[in-house]
Image 1 (cartoon, rainbow, N blue to C red):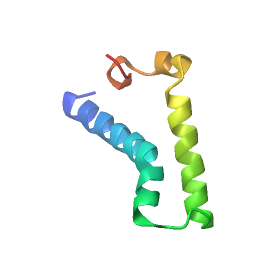
Image 2 (image 1 turned 60 degrees about the horizontal axis):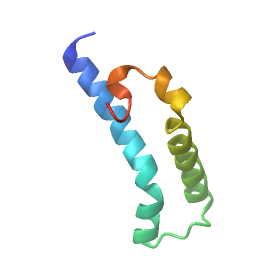
Image 3 (image 1 turned 60 degrees about the vertical axis):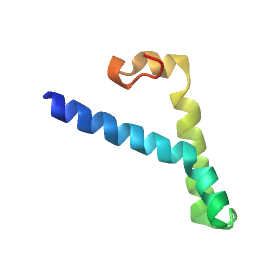
Length: 70
């Protein structure tokens, strides 16, 4: 895999995770009601993704270039 491809994948993953982590704040700042079904679903998924990605066992499975703290 070329370095450009690795960088593109890493950027896409980091952006998706960043949006997932920031989504609750974005919804709150935008004043969107959290009771809307699609917002509630998105918040639940983003919370789940952020929680799972923070697990040490998941970090160990990720390639080194996707791990946090390295």
